[in-house]
Image 1 (spheres, rainbow, N blue to C red):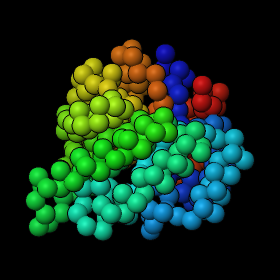
Image 2: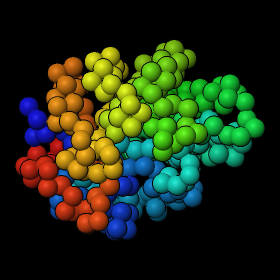
Image 3: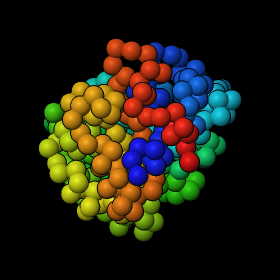
Length: 279
């Protein structure tokens, strides 16, 4: 087993960001990758114009890269925001306006995983009211995802870097997954298992894998400390991915790490070139 047996994709919102958005798919392809994922690329609008959507689809197609993961609108990310769907008022409205746009774009690119970041707690807002709003919006998102044959992902982040985000453990995210599936009856809400975030929270990553591999819809990795490439920290990433495989997970593994001080194209030395193309 090992890295060579995994199905990797590159997150173009954290790698190759030295390039304009429309040049990143070709750069990933030049590095040997055929699958990519993205945070919502248009941080200032949940509803970009048709020309912008078409231009990104063309860049993906021209590069021969398949989009395998996409975030719904999540506010300023990177930045202070961690999602919009539980934030009362304008941000919740923007998330709702984005749901069908993101789902339709996913359908046009063959993307079958849509990530809905929960959003931060807001000063002065009742947490229970935020959670009720979140469930309402996640139900809308799950139905839109189901319409285009996609799963809805719910992600746990880490408390040190996202202190206002309420889902900072695997069980907390799984609880939301279960709540959404119970509300829709669709069963398409899944856990996004990000090994870096779990390790930053001090969770037993092997234990999380054993408990929740069968409810996991996508995996992301970065080493810890530093959120760098595998081998720059102390996480046994190859072993943990093998554990996921042994537990039955055969989905994608998103490379969501910082390239450090070098160009992104040089940040894949740990992964043999033949192992980079999606299987």
